[in-house]
Image (cartoon, rainbow, N blue to C red; front, side):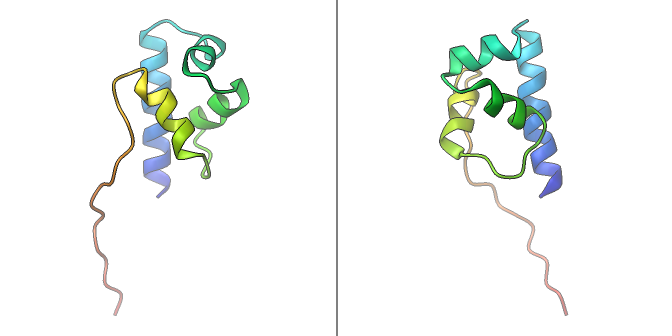
Length: 74
């Protein structure tokens, strides 16, 4: 799970920087608070999916189900 959180945080940060936006500018464009965006980019473990999607939508993406590896513990 930690890897996914870091990937999402890095994805948003990289996309924001490619568009040459500050965190404040991206938060305003996405309609989310600056604190939320900072937490997203820092990889906070618990975030509202609807707000994450508000940010991702600006880049043409959204969260969706992804098949997980099944690990059987014996």
